[in-house]
Length: 133
Image 1 (cartoon, rainbow, N blue to C red):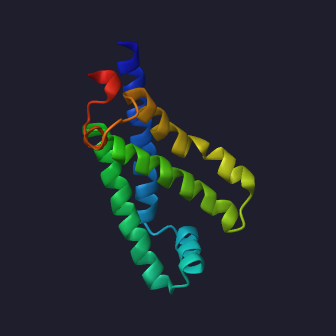
Image 2 (image 1 turned 90 degrees about the vertical axis):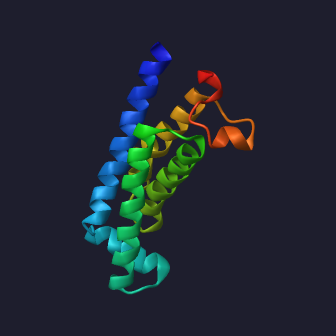
């Protein structure tokens, strides 16, 4: 019962993080457009399109973690949360901006560990983790 409650808290937290970032991306947050321009060496229009696509993806992952938390998706969310936190110091922001965002990758990773690290390819695509069988 308690791990189920912890699981739901993590699912809601991860969904909130990805929904919030997705909303900012869909709105075309200017700072992020600038970072994409610089990082990918593209113009503002192309950067805005990339950011919009990222926003759609983030919102879809937010919904997925609430509906059916799949291990592969949680691993992607942990990677993406780590990368987007790391982008800040790469783009010249403080390293503390990276540290402040450790929960962005830590929460999906914690949920993945709570569900049980998959031992087979099939388990990576199953919403029932090893600890929930």
